Image (cartoon, rainbow, N blue to C red):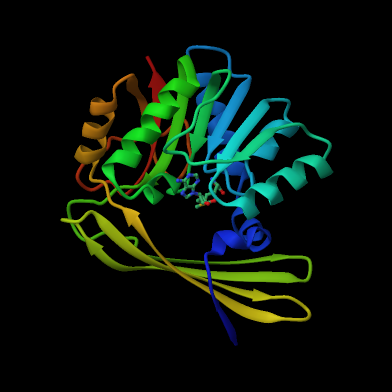
Length: 259
Ligand SMILES: C[S@@+](CC[C@H](N)C(=O)[O-])C[C@H]1O[C@@H](n2cnc3c(N)ncnc32)[C@H](O)[C@@H]1O
């Protein structure tokens, strides 16, 4: 099979087939959070690192005013083309989630599948939480989902999916290559096998995620200031099943509220 060594984010069509298929539970959970945890009505929503906008366009379809940013130009182009095709308006731009400003504040924001961990140092992670604090109105929410590093070998070190859309099939496989708790680096291997009627090929990608124990994340929040933890859930995305974060927690969704 032909192998292409490149970021999977440079292939928004295939990314969207894979991750876009599994949107409903996340979407419903986010709506439930807006209702349950926000201390203001939620009409304007923002997604940093929005990628293809697989969730954002669902919110636009439901009547929310939406905006987002992403570092990857191809993802942003794909995202904006879909908004245009569907006749929806949105403001999505190429930008760095560690350093941005918005003109008008939002009521809620979300960032659900580890994108935050792409910020590989303290400065950019703090920059991000500070920018998000400025981007949200008081009482607004930032719903942030990612994997914590538990105080024992993590249970989840490998994941695979297979998704089909029409004549296109994408099989993905993601695996932890190494975990360095001292340097706070998790090296990850991600591969997409793409099957179209005319071509089959493999996209191969390695990258580094910053690691967080729950204490490291809570300390970071405190240092940045302006946030309270309104609730904690996991990737089951059930509003009626909050979790207690402890040394064993892996997947977590923090519902942060702007104070
Ligand atoms: C796992 S994808 C998530 C995309 C989208 N949030 C979703 O749920 O499908 C991670 C995204 O983070 C983006 N990204 C990585 N570093 C970034 C940064 N510093 N600023 C903005 N976006 C970034 C990548 O380009 C990619 O689109």
